[in-house]
Image (cartoon, rainbow, N blue to C red):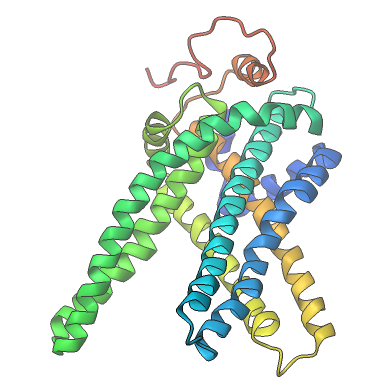
Length: 321
C-alpha cells in the first residue's frame, strides 16, 4: 500500500479491491506458496466436501439397512467424516488468515518477507486467532439459537395458518441473516486482523473490531455479502454440475468444471483475506488512528522470537485527542 495513511480512509470498495489485488505482486513467491500450501487445500475441501458426503447420504436414504448395527456403522462413518472435515476447515482457515495478515503487515512495515518467516510466526499467531475465534463462536451460538427459534416459530405459524406470524417470522429471519449474520462475519474477520496486529485478542479484539467498524459498517457489510454470494454461487454450480450432474454431464466435463471452480474459489479466498487486511488499515485511517510502523515492525518480530523493545502500544494516540 503506497498511499499515505491519512488517504486510506477515502478508499471506496473498488479501490480496496484494487489495492488488495496489487499486494501479491510485491512478494509473488511468498503469496504463491501461501496460496498453494494453505489456501488451495482449504478451497478444495470446501467444494469437495459435498462430493464425498453425497454418496454416503444417498446410500442412507435410498438403501436403508434393516440391520441396526449396519445403520449405526454408516452414520458413524458420516459423522466421523464430518468431524474431520470441520477440524480441517477450521485449522486451514486460521492458518490462511494468520499467514496472509502477517505477510501483508510485514510488507506494510517494509519488513523482509519470506515464506519461512511467515510459517515461523504462525504458531504464536494461531493461538491468538484461536482464542478470538472461541469468543466469536459464543456469539454465533447465541445467533444460531435465535435464528432456530424463529425458524421453529415460522413452522408453527405455517401449520396454524397464522398469516401475520408467518410474515413477521420471515422478515425477522431475513433480517437476522442479511444483517446480523453479515455483521458478525465482518466483526470476526476484522477481529482476526486485530488479534494479529495488535497486542490484544479474544473479547478485547472483538470490542476493538466493533469500534473500528463504526462508520464503515456499510462498506464491511457489502464486502462480506458479496464474498458470501460469490462463494454460494460457486458452491451451487459445483453441486449442480459436479456432484449431482452425473446423468447430464460426462466425467471429463465434470472434472474440468470442478477444477475450474476450485481455481476460482482459491482466487476468491485469497482476495478475501487480502481485503480484510486492507480494510483494517482503512478503518484505522477513518478513525484517525495512525499505526506506528516501527512499533508494528517490532510487534511482528516478537512472533519470530526477535527482541521486542518495551512499547506501550502498537498504535499511536488517537489524532483526535
